[in-house]
Length: 234
Image (cartoon, rainbow, N blue to C red):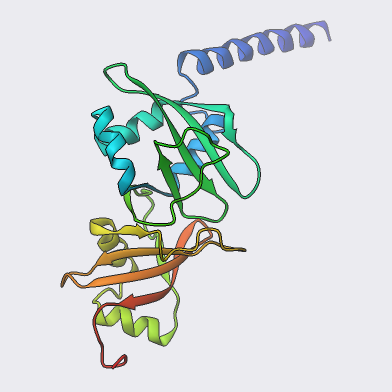
């Protein structure tokens, strides 16, 4: 019995040292179970968007959208300055550019929403809201394939055929090419699930609005608005 307790003690000491090594030397990287990385994982499982008016702040910081994504990945979450309750959460990130300039970014995390919005002008997480006007440029897409699927109604299938986007993967790739979030036509505060409007152009440069919800960690599109007429819509 004495040997058992001795081994258990050595195991506990080794585990504790390893835990400290991971947290302080690797800054939680690879530890998906830490609160900070759970937040980051939840954010990057969604589309990450920034409204056009916020682009001015990027210019002031002299960083690109790609650099902003990387900075957010490497930044610390300040949970004391974050809004962690209710259906609509907002997390405060303490960021720093390569040149050492410090700035903060608020990132929204709405329940059952497939977008997270980056806010650079707003500094108070309790006052932060998703945009209600303008366009949200999508600067990050989840890596997962088959991220988008559509309802199987006859009319929706007909619309996809008219836009030559019958294949869901091709539809997703077309959205990735030029898609934006149309905040005005989205209903992000709707309950039980927010509705999102994605505006993009097909291969013939025709505008399409796709309306979707977050369902089982994927985007389910339930309606299209086409800017062009089809035989069925005339």
